[in-house]
Image (tube, rainbow, N blue to C red; front, side):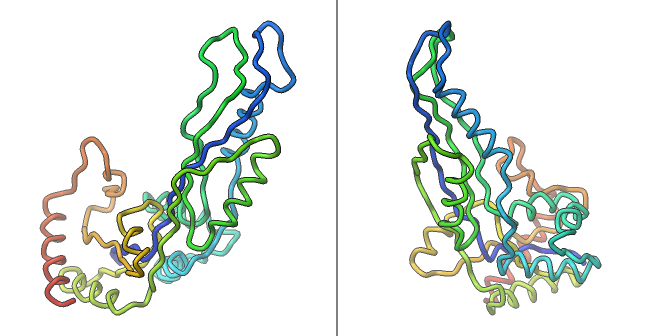
Length: 248
């Protein structure tokens, strides 16, 4: 089986800032409410936390198709190990199994001998469909008391039907050039401009038809300094895309 992934859902994207406040003081006189220490504890807690697994329709369809093709159970107990066996696809799909909050930027004092009155950390947050409030509540519990959470931009996840007629059209186009190809719905852990169309009630599907060598991690190439695909993969993509546009 050659899997050709189609994103029927996309994780939402949000930014948030954690802030801790305390009394400013000279470094020679430690305080009990050091903002840097309190923030560091909250950041470490966020980094170590794993939100619960949520089997969205897109994730479940992916697991059903791959489970049947590879003889994998994808039970709650075996999910991590079964995903790991999928090679480079495992990290992509693994990121779609749960909400995530990743600390990315830290800011505090600028003088080594001064305890600052405030310290902050920025988080990159990726949200599963319908999980906005659960994520907010979970994050609040993880960081604990004494930490302010200030939300920045917040775009909720998108979700389109996994059994829409367009999936069949994509499958027909793929089958013409790749008889062993199977179009498999999945949830994209990143975000595209589709989030703006979703606000208008438009269902979007992310599909890049590429047939690459088994050991070529095409997802790792996205946004890389030397972003590239093999030339024959580009030709395959052009043929399939032309057929989709002609038959859709």
